[in-house]
Length: 261
Image 1 (cartoon, rainbow, N blue to C red):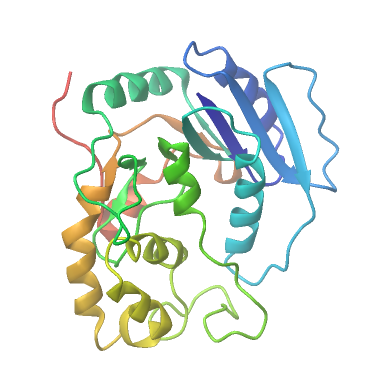
Image 2 (cartoon, one colour; image 1 turned 90 degrees about the horizontal axis):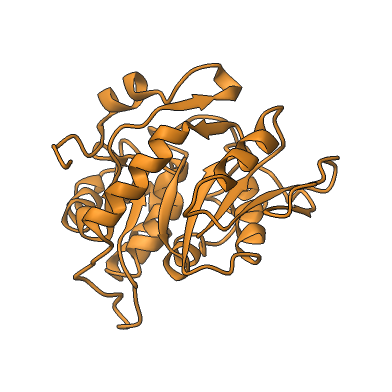
């Protein structure tokens, strides 16, 4: 299986990539970053891919979409894992995640409205329950075809109403980033969600008047098309901490907390 690490290069990004290559189920690691980075790889199983920095409004979604999709072009495996460049999942947790997905599998009983997909569930580090269409985007693991579908949403364009203008405003102005790309994926299973995206002020903001309908569809679908991981040990270099369970869980994010091995 291939891994894509996306984002700017942090001091430990390259060492993290090399560490992942020592796992027996990882074939290669692709670091997808920007043209102004100086990083080069001397490890045959670590590939460095560079691309121009796109138009970048607040919230950095375009950076994630462009860098990850560029990395996906170099994936040759049936499955893909996605990581941020400032995070390292400890080796013991990486092994645990492999045992977990081997046991739980990727079976998915629902299809896109056009009948073409998905090939299976996508696993996420956590799933939001207080916000509609909100898979946490730090880590994903799924069929490569499905991961590409998840990240096929349009880039923010300058001047478009839905494009963020500042880092905030979730109550009445800005769609949360996981809700933005998550809603485009949920729409593949229920075409009503396209209406929610078009009329995002009515459906996708924290105080939207018809938010309840978006929450209904989200609750109906999220555990059918996504799985969640057990809690992991991670080092988040940017913030000098582990994964912020104490921040995200009170906001409604949930994980696989049942006994499974």
